[in-house]
Structures are given as C-alpha cells and as structure tokens.
Picture 1 (cartoon, rainbow, N blue to C red):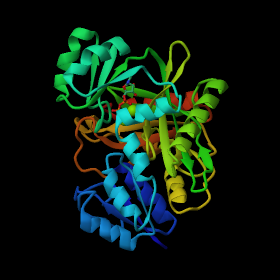
Picture 2: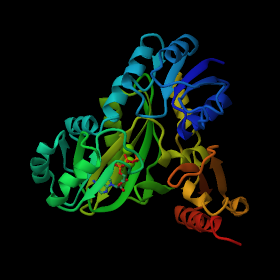
Picture 3: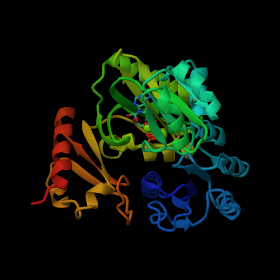
Picture 4: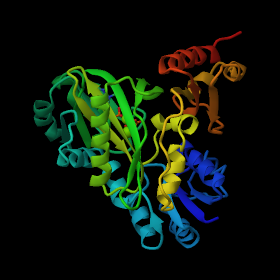
Amino acid sequence: GATLGMLGGGQLGRLFVLAAREAGYRVLVVDPDADSPAGRLADEHICADYDDADALTRLARECAAVTTEFENIPADALRTLARDVAVHPSAEAVATTQDRLREKSFLRGLGLPTAPFAAIHAAADLTEAAGTVGFPAILKRASFGYDGKGQVRVAGPKELAAAFASLGGVTCVLERRIDLVREVSIVLARGERGNTASYPLADNIHRGGILALSSVPAQIDEALSAKAVEMAVRIVEGLDYCGVLAVEFFVARDGALLVNEIAPRPHNSGHFTVDACVSSQFEQQLRALCGLPLGETRLLSPVAMVNLLGDRWQSGAPRWERLYSTPGARLHLYGKREARPGRKMGHFCVLADTVEEAVRRARALDEALSTPA
Ligand code: ATP
Ligand code: MG
Ligand code: MG
C-alpha cells in the first residue's frame, strides 16, 4: 500500500493510524513528543517539530498524501508540503480555523449565526467590545485554546481588564455567554469533487469546559437538525474543504442554533462513529485524503460515549472488569503513560437499543469504574 503522512501525534492521529493500517496503508507520523499516542503506533515516528525542514522533506518524498489531526500545525508547514504532495485539509482551511477571530469572521461572512463577539487586540479595545457584546461574557484567547483552556468567564465590565491580563494580553475574542439548553455537534466529510457525507448529530455534555459525554441520535427536532447539516455543508463549501471537519453548535434557550466553533479534523464527539457507524470518521478521513469514494455514515445503533480523563487514575486504575461485563460497552485507550488530571486517556462507548438506555448504562458504568469494590 501507499504511505501517508500525519502531522500530529495525539489520539485523533492514533485512531487515524489504526484506520489507515487496517486498509493496508503505511503511516509516517511527525510529532515532537517521543512517546506520542499516534507515533507509538505508526510505521515510523519522525520525532521533530511540525515545521522541521527535514521532516517535511521526508513527508514530501515518501508520502502519497499528508493530513493532520491538530489545528495548531503551522499553516506554513502545510503550504510548503502542498508544493510537492497532496495535503488535506489545506493550509488555508487550517489557518482560518486555528484562529478564533478569523474563524468567527469567516462564519459571519457566510451569514451564519454565532454568539455576539468582538476582537480584543489590546487593552484599549476592551470598553468598546464590552459595549457591543454585553454580559455575561467569556473572554477566549484567539489561538491555542482547547478543552476550555485559555478562557475566562467575565460577569461584568469591571472584571474585563483583569481577565485580559490573566490571559497574558494576547489577542482575544470577547463572546457573549449564551443561555444554553444544549450543545450539539456534527462531523462531516467532503471529498475532492465536492461531495459531502455527514454523520448524525451528537448531543454533548461538557464538564469544566471538557467534553464529558456524547450521545447519538441527538434528541433535537428534525428541523433543527436539518438546519445544522445545512450550516455545516455551507462551512465546508465556504472553505473549499477536503477531509473531515466538525462543527460545534449551541442551542440557545430561545431556540436559536448558533455555531460555536469549527475543528478541521475528526472530533472527540465523533468517536461514536468508530463503534456505531458503517464507516468511522477516521476511515472517512482516509477516504477523503486518498481520493476514494466517501463511506457510508449510517448509524447502526444508538450509542453513548464517555471520555476517560486522567483524574480517574488518581485513586488507582479504573475497574475495567466492570466495563467488560457491561453489555454493549467498548473500550478505547490511547496508550498515554502519564495520567494527568484533565488529560484525555481514552473513551468508551455503550451501544443499546435506545439512546436513553445507552446514556443510562454509560453513566452507570462511568460511576462504577471509579467506585471501590
Ligand atoms: P474544544 O476542546 O472543544 O476545542 P475550546 O477550548 O475551544 O474547546 P469552546 O468550545 O470555545 O472551547 O468552549 C468550551 C465550552 O465552554 C463549550 O462547549 C461550552 O460548554 C462553553 N462555552 C464556550 N463559549 C460559550 C458561550 N459563548 N456561551 C455559553 N457557553 C460557552
Ligand atoms: Mg476549540
Ligand atoms: Mg469546543
């Protein structure tokens, strides 16, 4: 089989490596971490920075195509590679989505609804931004934020200057805090010829800014779900995207569907596709990358997914025997050695006849994994 390149060594890269190897491909992973989840599983791990000239030369020479699992890859590295090898997603799509300001301006340009926001480049912008956005608000750094890191809640204008200083005075977005009734997300793929395939929406519950539980099918009405699909398709078309992309949405108390953010890659809330869909989001990434027809996104069973954070290992290893004795449960661990609090160590899915039953069993198992005998 052909050789593919992956920039990024995290769990999303690891799950891509699994899908690619299953289809007979070799994968080279570039990541500076000598012990990354994807690097450990790759045919070869090139231990280097993402924009290392020698690493990029090797990818260009040896790979049929290169993809990424991480939006913070320097866009220039993708641009350099694209001169010699197929790169999906493109440098332009990644550049747009790695910066919240660029991303939100892009969404606004498409006419898609978001929470009210304003750019903060310097302390001098705070007063005007407070006026346009209103309160309560959230201040988010424009780049390098994930799992709710690099965000501060701001109750009123008096807290704003301190919040900005606490983020280091870097470029930020001030966003109105939305009164949420739920959060949903969609993962979709777009092929080279502009064909799209979307997975069913997931209902997401976050804890401390980190995804805790996703369940599918999402319990929202047909009209809202159709609207989400339509918005997501406009986004991939607007980016002239090739590959897998996720869109996170807020459902506001007044019923409005707002785009929260975009991820130019498979998504944590799409992990259910591995256990519960005909083709997983990672197989889909492979298909789009290699110019193959997109796979079937059909859901085979209602499903709930729970993230396993490092916190759970604090009082000893989880009681895996309880997972293996739960009907419909499947475990995925990422092979990370150090279980730090808040670190995503793995996830599990529970398949059941109804989504309510899947969620009920997943929650019970979640609890039982950390309960002493
Ligand atoms: P990810 O790991 O998904 O990339 P992130 O660090 O980019 O996370 P966001 O998605 O911006 O963070 O926010 C994390 C969570 O915080 C959201 O899923 C939501 O629960 C809450 N949140 C963020 N912005 C808002 C908002 N404007 N109004 C209400 N809740 C919000
Ligand atoms: Mg994000
Ligand atoms: Mg998010």
